[in-house]
Each structure stands twice: as C-alpha cells, then as structure tokens.
Length: 299
Image (cartoon, rainbow, N blue to C red; front, side, top):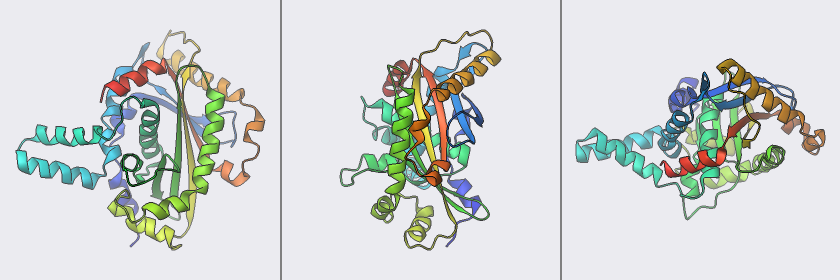
C-alpha cells in the first residue's frame, strides 16, 4: 500500500531544537556539481559559540536515532505501566539507547548522528533503514551507506543515501572530501544488495516495510536517488570574533576557500549522473578533538 506524504512527515523525529544551535546556509560553493549545497557551523550569539547547547541538543536526538517512533512508544509505555513513573520510563528508554554506543569511538557515531538529523531537517526524509541498531547486532554484518532515508513528492519516490566523514586533529579537508565521495559511490553501488539483506528485518520502520519491499520487487515507480555527503572537519583558521554577522560571514568564506583549493581532478572518474546527485554538507568545527571527547563522555 502506498504511503502518503503526511504519514512520512509523522515518521520524522524532532530536529528543530538541535537545529536552533546550528548556523547553516544553502548556496553554491566552487565544487562539482554546481548547485546549492549546505555550509553549516555551530551557531553563534554575538561572539559566543553555542557549543554546550549544540552538543546537549544533539545528544537528546540519540534515542530517536536508535529507535523508531513506534518502538520508542512501546518501550516507554511498557516501562510506564510497570513503574507508573514518567521520569523512570523516560530514563529507561534513554538508557537503552545510550547502551547502543561504544565509548572510545566517537568520530563515526558523532558524524552519523549529525547525518541522521541533517537529512531529516533538510530533506524531510525519515530513515528507511536504521543503521545504529544494525551496527550493534552481532548476527548482521554492516556495510554500505551510513544513512538510508526515504521521502516522496507528488511524482517521485526519493531514496537518500548518506555518508559521513569526521576528521579530528590535523586539518584534512581535501582528504575527507575525496574519501567521502568514493565511499558514497560505493554505497550507492551496493544499495540493492544491502536492502536485500535487511528488507525483512526490524531494522526498517514497520511503516516503510512496504516501500522497501516494493523497491526490491521492482514495483516502486518513479524512483530518484539523492546522495548526501557530510564532511565534518577540524578547522584551524582563526576567527576574528568581532560580531555575529562578521563571524558567520567569515565561516562561509572559509568553507568557500577550502572548496576552491580542491583540485578539479578529484572529481574525475565519477560518472556524470552520479556526481550530479551529490549534495554536500560542509561542517568546519574548531577544536573538534575536545568536542568529540565531550560527546563521548556526555552520554
């Protein structure tokens, strides 16, 4: 049975509180393909970078990354029925989600959690396949894209594949960019075999099972793929910190400059059609090592 756009919207998790602490701009950057991409940064109020609230709100999205709305509600209601305590039921749900994380490996989990939020916010697309529970399942091998989301418009069924790369310490923007593109193309090429493994498992939201099955059976019409590449990296260029407008303008100029320095040869070898579906989210972070450490210790 086809799923309508209103139902898809109900599957989205709450991202607005987190995004209130993200500054973002959609514009063209000097990279291929030539279209609007997203430059993002931790938000500023005047000269104050809102790092604490950014990280706090990001951590509050962990439960929704791990569990669908239906599963969250089931776990919460079962605990509430046993405890008759809203706080206890809420903490029980959060604790179960946090246990899916492995401490000491913050880079990948931080990047994938960002990707989960950004795809939902920018594309209005809930996850088709939940990658975090899959990563902690001992009986399943995880490969392919870091994120697989789904949405639709009046004429198309849109499948969104996402890849996140998070580079701390020494500045490696160009390296991250090249690796991200290659990884995302590989994930695109393995999409069909990946969905073949998990279509009948509970890693796919129950409301989207029919979508996944229709796709695998070749019965999902007017499919369009979009590829999302998130690159979060440690930025080393100092900010002047004179005013909020100046800081935000300078951040976007830094992203533009980094893109300008990417050699055109980097894009060679990618098929034109696949390259045109690329959507970049470029995220400079100052003192990324410290932020990752705080993320790892704060759950």
